[in-house]
Image (cartoon, rainbow, N blue to C red; front, side, top):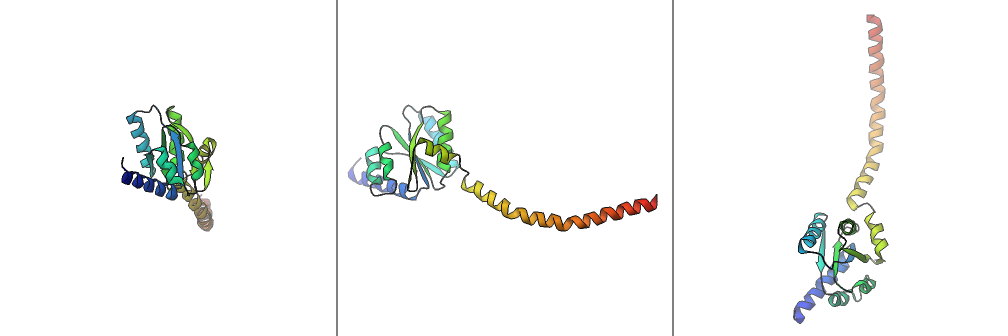
Length: 171
């Protein structure tokens, strides 16, 4: 890899660290290509990505960034899992680590906040952006459906009473 290629990698990593909602650092020593492809596919399904880069280049890219404390995790064979959604990459990484013992989560960052292993697990248990939006919409929609039910209830009650009166007269 020549100097120009290294500079390009450092720039790409810098953009990843700056624009991602969450970056998870994990050790992947001993994983097969098929296992890595499975991880990449799972990450792509939620809008995230997986990136392998040299630790030295990643440390250079981290200089001056908010997640610079993540540099101490960069030893050995490391991989970055990241997504714009602050929860997606952590969820996929945590789920994948449970099924593959060669994929070991070391930590990561969420914005300016450094995450250790427990922090990544905690983030993984949070609801995703889509789940939060669905919860908010249901909270907003619930009063409207309750009002519609309350308005419609007297009419159905009156219809029931009239039907009962008709049945009494017929009998």
